Length: 228
Figure 1 (cartoon, rainbow, N blue to C red):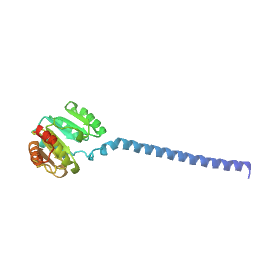
Figure 2: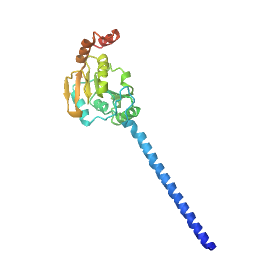
Figure 3: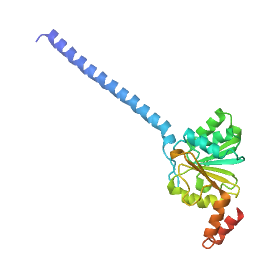
Figure 4: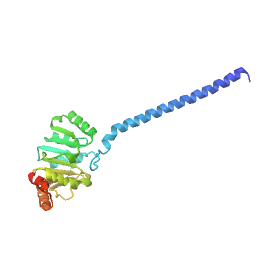
């Protein structure tokens, strides 16, 4: 084989190698871009869809338009302070503020709290709303005259005891999606997943006192009596 032929074969082989290397580098680059995009997307979306760490898992499921409307309708004759327990993206709190309530939300997920504060500012109700990063089991709701809760069945019996011991007798409690297990609602509104149940604090506090007087500790009974 002549030197020219050797040179030609050598050039072709080198070109093939370089081409394969180029394709390999391009593939790695594309993989890196796609992988980075997926990681970034998860980092942004995960805080909004993953449940925050709570004593009982309370996942973030946004309230429907019908649920918000039902809550506002059953509270239309009410005023004063309102709290949304597990406020998520703040839509109940913001809607309540637009209807004249001084509204607060408690949420353990900081991303959702910051987002709620931004939404309240954008919609012009930041002066009549507040959002707090807190576990609902570590907060007292004694100052609120209206309570909204989107709970799960596993937590409702414990929440009954907490609210009955803390709320004033003039308070109203609105449960969404799931009712309280032993309380008797004074009113219901909506249907299906949009149903809301309204409870009167004077009624459930009275029932709790009569049902627990013989089995409460002195400290528990003192707490109940102080909020009656």
